[in-house]
Length: 236
Image (cartoon, rainbow, N blue to C red):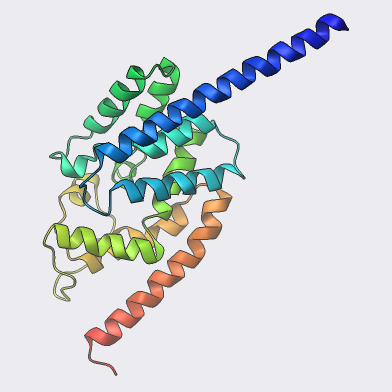
């Protein structure tokens, strides 16, 4: 019994060490990302990352997934978004991997984070996705929740303005069932983006928690669009 007690003590000490090490990785990553994204387009800046990180932790309260992988991915998923790097979809995973390797994160964790970043975007889902994990589901949901609702509306118009796109043009139809390339190369008005992505996200959530949150945010967007068209058409 004495030896067994010592074993339990050692196990508890080891688990405590592991937790402290993981918390240190997460802290260093958060500091790196906040500094790296200073001056970024405000729909994909540190505040977006912080919201996705918080969404991730919220979902993890109900879902069983590797916390370290999820939190590191949430923090690093937009560290070098391909939209701002000539469409290069490899730069984000590469920058994330270089940083995580540099602070001593286990190789298997680094690879997992890189695979999620490469495959989690809406754009990626329109092509061939060769990787899947529970952790991808969690962070993908966390990111998609930030693309809908009031904040999603604000982000959409902010990015549209950043790209100098029209708010709305009734002569430009919505393009449904877009290919990955068509989606990447679109220059459509921001209102079209609601139908080509944002309104589709509610039914593409993976986790029970995200599905529940998405319902209210989806309804808010639908209400916004109804009001938008009413004002556009000169209604009082």
